[in-house]
Image (cartoon, rainbow, N blue to C red; front, side):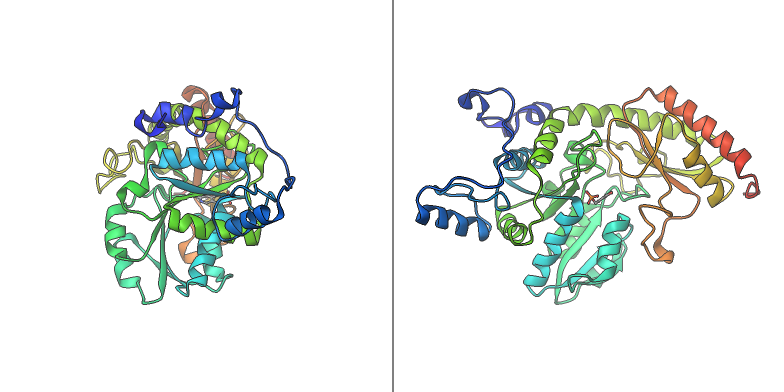
Length: 400
Ligand SMILES: Cc1ncc(COP(=O)(O)O)c(C=O)c1O
């Protein structure tokens, strides 16, 4: 049975599970082995060599869990189906996934990276640090082409961007990049709303920690791509040991069947919360793709099927009022991360985007909210009390 022939909800439920009935089980098996009994030495050695070079295990078996794991492989094949490609490679975190891509650029002697800001603060930090020997040119979506150099190995961008929710035209960025591979961090959109490979991107990055897991109990990362990139990334993963734990792979696969329903419900609530905040006297700008003027390129409905459930807003009264608002929520959790079933609120300038150089850091007045599965009116009531309390706690800046 080819899961790809079905609709996206069916695919989310059944991808990666096609062999369960023949195996005689209903739930995917969780294989926690760190090593595997070996039979014939030559066969095991040949399998080892295949995996170390980025291939799959052969008849000699998986040999050792740093090289390959069947539970993780199930999650990878399911995610690849959802992204409309053949292959995905999972890592111990989103940052480990990005690190593997950067290491490949260095290995191929194309160590210059064109990075479209804004990006997640950790991504910005890694690129700015040049830790692996990469060099970066920061740019905006319309200036990618002029930032390219003969040694450019990668163009990296996010859409929607963290934390401003700006949308960027993937087709246009890919056209500007020419032969240079484009990596799209699609963490905020999920494959439910957007499939960047279908718009010409070479690599799709997810912090699987977020929507794919969806329950705030797993850290992981994944790259969806073609087999040529996948084998290079698997070989880097094998030597650097940046593997996803099998239990994390199990939890991520378990999260996928509900992904479409979660994303759809969360974005409906986020749209209602954004509309409420836009009318609030203590709130300045509200950033959510559902808001008027938030999608000047007309990408919703074309590139991205809906606005998603992340939003940002600026609090009137300055940075202290914004920080006080984040600290004053009761139902919503004051915490970083996003994409789970419960709503989270955080102050990017102090936390997720703290390492970003001052000129590119989000404003002190900005808060980012990940809207969960709660009732919209309960979230609105909590934001209302938090904004009121923050106003009392931080009255100094109320001149804005
Ligand atoms: C858009 C985006 N990309 C990548 C990452 C990094 O992922 P991880 O924390 O799983 O390493 C994050 C983390 O917040 C993120 O928000």
